[in-house]
Image (cartoon, rainbow, N blue to C red; front, side, top):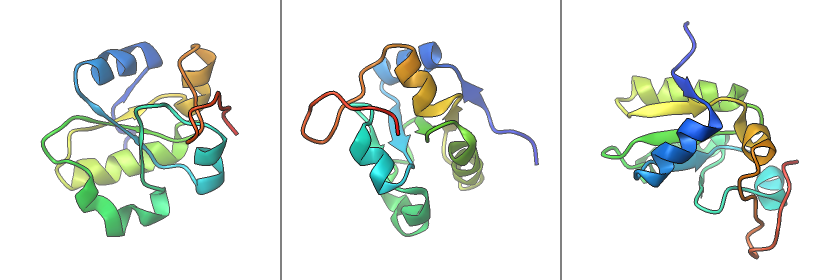
Length: 112
C-alpha cells in the first residue's frame, strides 16, 4: 500500500485557515496533555463507530503524535471517499513549528 498524501505544518496551517478540519486521532492521555486549539478529537480506535462525525464535504487533515497512526487513518478515510490528508510529523512537528498547543482548560499544553 502506498503512503497517503501528506502535507507539512505550513501547508496544514494554510489549509486549516481555508476551512479544512483538523482531526486528531491520538489517545486520551495524548489529547489531554495538549492539542491544537481547533482540532476535533476522535481517537483512532473510536473512528469506525464515529466516522459519521467527520464531515464528508470538507477537507480533512489527520494528525497524531508523529504521523504514523494518522497515515493509516488518512488511507482509511480516502478509501471511504473523504478528502483526507495526513499531517506529516504530527503534533510533534506542529509544536516544533511554534503553533499553539493547549489543554481542554485552554492553558498551554505539550505534546506527550
